[in-house]
Length: 167
Ligand SMILES: [Zn+2]
Image (cartoon, rainbow, N blue to C red):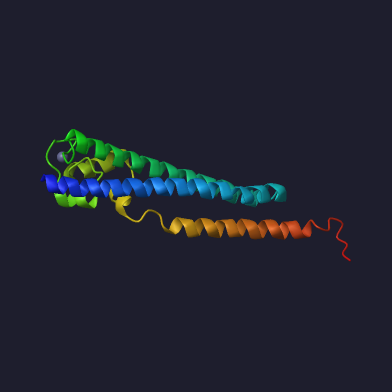
Protein backbone atom coordinates (compact mmCIF):
# COMPACT_ATOMS: atom_id res chain seq x y z
CA UNK A 1 0.00 0.00 0.00
CA UNK A 2 1.16 3.50 -0.71
CA UNK A 3 2.21 5.71 2.16
CA UNK A 4 -0.27 8.25 0.93
CA UNK A 5 -3.11 5.75 1.22
CA UNK A 6 -2.10 4.76 4.72
CA UNK A 7 -2.11 8.39 5.79
CA UNK A 8 -5.58 8.77 4.38
CA UNK A 9 -6.86 5.77 6.29
CA UNK A 10 -5.08 6.90 9.41
CA UNK A 11 -6.90 10.19 9.21
CA UNK A 12 -10.16 8.33 8.79
CA UNK A 13 -9.44 6.12 11.79
CA UNK A 14 -8.59 9.08 13.99
CA UNK A 15 -11.84 10.69 12.98
CA UNK A 16 -13.73 7.51 13.87
CA UNK A 17 -11.96 7.30 17.19
CA UNK A 18 -12.94 10.81 18.08
CA UNK A 19 -16.50 10.22 17.02
CA UNK A 20 -16.88 7.06 19.07
CA UNK A 21 -15.34 8.65 22.12
CA UNK A 22 -17.74 11.55 21.85
CA UNK A 23 -20.63 9.18 21.46
CA UNK A 24 -19.60 7.20 24.51
CA UNK A 25 -19.37 10.30 26.68
CA UNK A 26 -22.71 11.55 25.37
CA UNK A 27 -24.26 8.29 26.45
CA UNK A 28 -22.88 8.76 29.94
CA UNK A 29 -24.72 12.06 30.09
CA UNK A 30 -28.01 10.64 28.93
CA UNK A 31 -27.72 7.87 31.50
CA UNK A 32 -27.49 10.41 34.29
CA UNK A 33 -30.55 12.30 33.14
CA UNK A 34 -32.42 9.00 32.85
CA UNK A 35 -32.36 8.86 36.64
CA UNK A 36 -35.60 10.87 36.72
CA UNK A 37 -37.43 8.20 34.80
CA UNK A 38 -36.07 5.55 37.14
CA UNK A 39 -37.48 7.26 40.22
CA UNK A 40 -40.86 7.73 38.63
CA UNK A 41 -41.29 4.10 37.65
CA UNK A 42 -40.14 2.95 41.08
CA UNK A 43 -42.74 5.00 42.94
CA UNK A 44 -45.50 3.96 40.58
CA UNK A 45 -44.91 0.29 41.41
CA UNK A 46 -46.14 -0.60 37.97
CA UNK A 47 -44.57 -3.84 36.73
CA UNK A 48 -44.95 -2.74 33.13
CA UNK A 49 -42.91 0.37 33.74
CA UNK A 50 -40.10 -1.56 35.28
CA UNK A 51 -40.05 -3.92 32.36
CA UNK A 52 -39.73 -1.02 29.95
CA UNK A 53 -37.02 0.51 32.07
CA UNK A 54 -35.07 -2.72 32.20
CA UNK A 55 -35.37 -3.18 28.48
CA UNK A 56 -34.15 0.37 28.00
CA UNK A 57 -31.11 -0.19 30.21
CA UNK A 58 -30.26 -3.42 28.45
CA UNK A 59 -30.41 -1.73 25.09
CA UNK A 60 -28.10 0.98 26.31
CA UNK A 61 -25.63 -1.56 27.58
CA UNK A 62 -25.64 -3.45 24.33
CA UNK A 63 -24.98 -0.24 22.47
CA UNK A 64 -22.16 0.61 24.86
CA UNK A 65 -20.53 -2.73 24.31
CA UNK A 66 -20.77 -2.32 20.59
CA UNK A 67 -19.20 1.12 20.78
CA UNK A 68 -16.44 -0.06 23.06
CA UNK A 69 -15.65 -2.95 20.77
CA UNK A 70 -15.52 -0.74 17.74
CA UNK A 71 -13.38 1.80 19.52
CA UNK A 72 -10.99 -0.98 20.41
CA UNK A 73 -10.81 -2.06 16.79
CA UNK A 74 -10.05 1.48 15.73
CA UNK A 75 -7.26 1.71 18.30
CA UNK A 76 -5.85 -1.62 17.16
CA UNK A 77 -5.84 -0.45 13.56
CA UNK A 78 -4.01 2.74 14.54
CA UNK A 79 -1.43 0.67 16.40
CA UNK A 80 -1.00 -1.54 13.39
CA UNK A 81 -0.30 1.52 11.26
CA UNK A 82 2.48 2.48 13.66
CA UNK A 83 3.89 -1.03 13.63
CA UNK A 84 3.70 -1.13 9.87
CA UNK A 85 1.48 -4.20 9.93
CA UNK A 86 -1.65 -2.41 8.86
CA UNK A 87 -3.58 -3.46 5.79
CA UNK A 88 -2.50 -7.08 5.77
CA UNK A 89 -4.90 -9.95 6.16
CA UNK A 90 -4.53 -11.62 9.56
CA UNK A 91 -5.32 -14.94 7.94
CA UNK A 92 -3.28 -15.09 4.74
CA UNK A 93 -0.97 -12.06 5.14
CA UNK A 94 -1.91 -10.64 1.77
CA UNK A 95 -2.44 -6.95 1.38
CA UNK A 96 -6.04 -5.94 1.78
CA UNK A 97 -7.42 -3.93 -1.10
CA UNK A 98 -7.36 -0.21 -0.51
CA UNK A 99 -10.99 0.09 -1.61
CA UNK A 100 -11.97 -2.36 1.10
CA UNK A 101 -9.95 -0.56 3.75
CA UNK A 102 -11.45 2.69 2.66
CA UNK A 103 -14.90 1.27 3.31
CA UNK A 104 -13.94 -0.53 6.54
CA UNK A 105 -10.70 0.93 7.88
CA UNK A 106 -10.76 -1.37 10.91
CA UNK A 107 -10.85 -4.62 8.99
CA UNK A 108 -8.10 -7.15 9.63
CA UNK A 109 -8.98 -9.51 6.85
CA UNK A 110 -9.05 -9.58 3.11
CA UNK A 111 -12.46 -9.98 1.54
CA UNK A 112 -12.26 -13.78 1.42
CA UNK A 113 -11.30 -14.23 5.03
CA UNK A 114 -13.63 -11.54 6.34
CA UNK A 115 -16.50 -13.67 5.15
CA UNK A 116 -15.07 -16.64 6.96
CA UNK A 117 -14.59 -14.65 10.16
CA UNK A 118 -18.16 -13.43 10.13
CA UNK A 119 -19.50 -16.93 9.70
CA UNK A 120 -17.31 -18.39 12.42
CA UNK A 121 -17.99 -15.76 15.02
CA UNK A 122 -21.62 -15.25 14.11
CA UNK A 123 -21.02 -11.61 14.76
CA UNK A 124 -22.81 -8.75 13.07
CA UNK A 125 -21.33 -8.00 9.71
CA UNK A 126 -18.29 -5.77 9.84
CA UNK A 127 -19.95 -3.39 7.43
CA UNK A 128 -22.13 -2.39 10.38
CA UNK A 129 -19.34 -0.26 11.75
CA UNK A 130 -19.22 2.25 8.96
CA UNK A 131 -22.94 2.86 8.77
CA UNK A 132 -24.17 5.86 10.77
CA UNK A 133 -24.35 4.06 14.05
CA UNK A 134 -27.87 3.30 15.26
CA UNK A 135 -29.15 6.77 14.63
CA UNK A 136 -32.73 5.64 15.08
CA UNK A 137 -31.90 4.45 18.57
CA UNK A 138 -32.15 7.84 20.22
CA UNK A 139 -35.67 8.56 19.08
CA UNK A 140 -36.69 5.03 19.92
CA UNK A 141 -35.41 5.51 23.45
CA UNK A 142 -37.19 8.82 23.76
CA UNK A 143 -40.41 7.17 22.74
CA UNK A 144 -39.93 4.56 25.41
CA UNK A 145 -39.27 7.21 28.02
CA UNK A 146 -42.39 9.07 27.02
CA UNK A 147 -44.43 5.91 27.41
CA UNK A 148 -42.97 5.37 30.85
CA UNK A 149 -43.66 8.94 31.80
CA UNK A 150 -47.28 8.81 30.64
CA UNK A 151 -47.99 5.51 32.35
CA UNK A 152 -46.37 6.74 35.55
CA UNK A 153 -48.20 10.07 35.68
CA UNK A 154 -51.50 8.39 34.93
CA UNK A 155 -51.00 6.14 37.87
CA UNK A 156 -49.80 9.06 39.97
CA UNK A 157 -52.99 11.03 39.30
CA UNK A 158 -55.27 8.25 40.44
CA UNK A 159 -53.28 7.69 43.62
CA UNK A 160 -53.76 11.37 44.55
CA UNK A 161 -57.17 10.43 45.84
CA UNK A 162 -56.67 7.00 47.36
CA UNK A 163 -60.17 6.86 48.89
CA UNK A 164 -61.80 7.86 45.60
CA UNK A 165 -63.38 11.04 46.96
CA UNK A 166 -62.89 14.36 45.22
CA UNK A 167 -63.66 17.93 46.21
ZN1 LIG B 1 -6.87 -13.26 3.61
